[in-house]
Length: 239
Image (cartoon, rainbow, N blue to C red; front, top):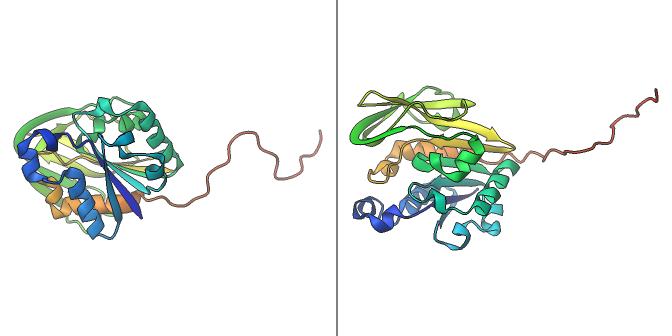
């Protein structure tokens, strides 16, 4: 299965603290553990031609993983439309952390995708509330992160089709941190953790969730539905 990990790759260029945590970029860290899990993983970044998401790349991608934060507005609308169409046609999409505000996630959700947030080095505990779900395979009752950015409700998204994780934060907030959707033939998984200054994507349980999420979001290979004016399957008796 071919996975493309997309990252705007701006924090890594500007912030030494982020570069110290992810010296090769967040995208390379994620692609690295996905490759170790057996996926054919490649990366794409904002400043590449067509943001690295050419038709050739998109057409050969089974699951697209998306991380963005400070440059959402720089993603060209025509590229967003191409990604959207690929999702509708069956490509999986895994949206991470601040990708909740990405153009592609907002257009697929149809809402503002807004939320509360706070950077205070606080503990996050992600409770597995759907242990039978494939994305939760191999996990215990919860994942605990010593330090993370807080995201709090209300999270302005459509009601998830399946809710896999709910986070609790040291400051008291809770958050729907693992949400799944289908759009057209494509499956979408939103997963909350991953602030750029914390080593979240080095955590083995977080890696397991993303790896499971990619497997879950993979295309099913079902036949594309036929739309429009249709000829009858059986003879229609004249009235």
